[in-house]
Amino acid sequence: MNDHKLAKLKALLELDFKDSHLIENAFVHRSYLNESHAFSESNERLEYLGDAVLELATSIFLYEKYREFQEGMLTNLRASLVRTESLAG
Image (cartoon, rainbow, N blue to C red; front, side):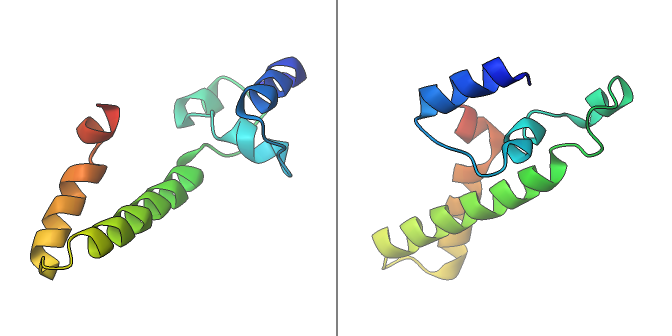
């Protein structure tokens, strides 16, 4: 991602990034590493972390909202919410 595009993203999101490399790395798919030597790692580690954060936030929400649900029901509900198809919708 060039500096101009990164500046536009920062302005659009109204954020300032401490480490612009992390933002750029978020857009690097593993298959791109074969085509470019600008990056040494893909976004997979960030994806792993993001999945964990999403799962935690969803767990807290469900735990607080559905106090009468047992663990199994909460787990099933969370799984249905964080799957790709649900998030895409």
